[in-house]
Image (cartoon, rainbow, N blue to C red):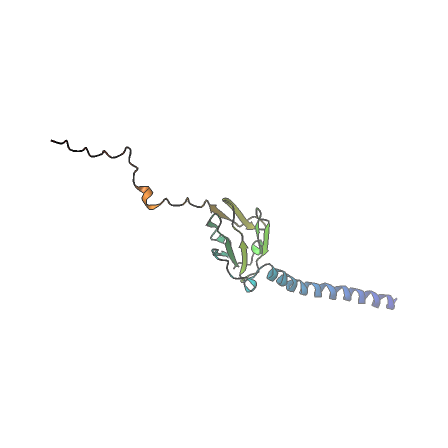
Amino acid sequence: MSNLMSNLMSRRSLMLLASVSASLAAPAAFAQRSDAAGTDASAPPLPAGAREVEVIVDNAYSPSVIEVTEGEPLRLRFVRRDYSPCSREVVFPTLNVRRMLPTNQPVVIDLPALSVGEHPFQCWMNMLRGRIVVRARPAAAPPADAGAPAPSRPAPRARPRPRR
């Protein structure tokens, strides 16, 4: 009977040891996954013509509304300052993008040129919300002389003087 009890105790201690080591390894796996998701250290150089906006996550997204022009590439740099589990992930549902946001580590998300309209982003629980507003590119400016009014009729011709 004592052999059976010692065998049972060793199995329990092995299972306990395995669960403890797995729980200790989980944060390391999470950190590796979030690094692969695009932290600041792995960010490539900013593409030409792109705009970079830093978004602070601290009980809300700040700024929560980001305005860009149609065709303008955008780089978002998320910095999570709060420790709530709600803010641990940002989701762009219309763009099919999700990124883990480790606390106090910048995470870079490069977005391509977006179509005109609104593109929401939110936490994984849909409690924190923001949006990217893409405005249409303004029409090209008319040439400088195009602003002068066009003559409505030709200018009168000078009449020749009668001969005497």
